[in-house]
Image (cartoon, rainbow, N blue to C red; front, top):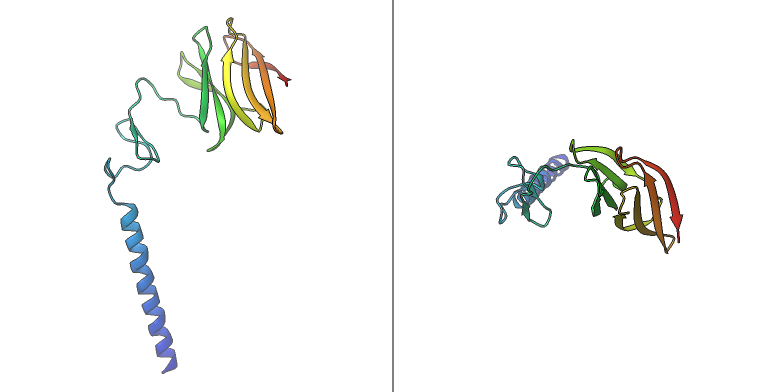
Length: 158
């Protein structure tokens, strides 16, 4: 008789846990203010954010890893650089060829703990990035060619 009671308790426990899991799943799938969209790219090209905003960007979207916190467009209009704030799969700089719309550099390291901002020199040959390492503010100077968007040397100041 003791075996039967144990099996009965096991079956009751499984049934109860199934009800709880099912109710949590139903709650998670509940429609919000914008319907039942999942976070991320939507079939119509818009993007659903984690805080329930629905964004419909103008123009072409270029996806890359990370969390962009600053963007600088080269004065020649051919490339743009996005500074990644870290996390979400990214670190450093992401370089985009604006004529083709393709990512030509991903996660170019700046060797900084925190990153803050970007700016190009007026001639577009030098890119400046600000951030900190070990609690000390830094200015990173990146020198490269305008056309290719490649970085040939990096200098740290601060």
